[in-house]
Length: 129
Length: 129
Image (cartoon, rainbow over all chains, first blue to last red; front, side, top):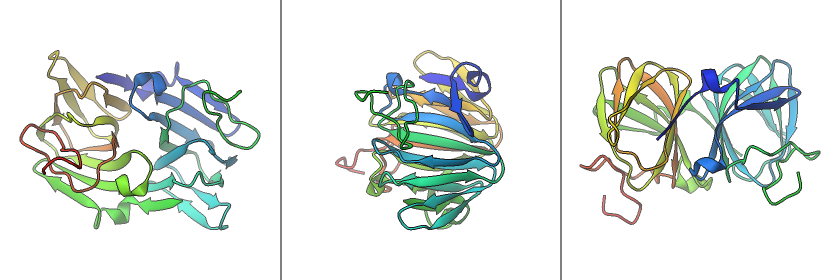
């Protein structure tokens, strides 16, 4: 059994860049077959994201914002209780009206060494980073 | 892209039994490779659980309680921010001191037809329910 506390893991397991940070509570090395992160989208952030190599589920714990599906132009409001799943590796824009705290699950699991690439994706482990 | 709202899904996607209920926001049919649920542990509940066929990650959004690892006897406090991962199919007792709201990810994904069996596990799809 693995037990981790986001409140303390924030100091040691967090990565981030402009507009977001993410605390990796579970990574590939934990052997769960998925990774699990608590991600904060900063107030006013606008992030172009396209996880061409991963499926992601996001659940909004707090805050307000939106997600734009670039394939259809649809904009879905995000507030506590909203879950979105990028089951088609959906190209999207995430906007934080306020700071948003999200629980994120990735399949395949992130290794913790990924960086966001120019196209908004994370590379797979075998890809150059 | 799948978008679901826990606040409305509660009425249509919730299962439960004594001491708990769970809203299945993603199931196997959604094709994510895991399932994702918002589960409420009721105040005072004491649940013997042993997912012999599944790995589970649980993140506490609200409430207070504990998890007892039956293999070691260790009791870990649960409060908002605590994540536990049953990476060894750990036999455990979950106790709700107050009502607890948890974000749960299962691998393999639940189909939505599982029931808790006598031994505290969920059967796999091919198993008799």
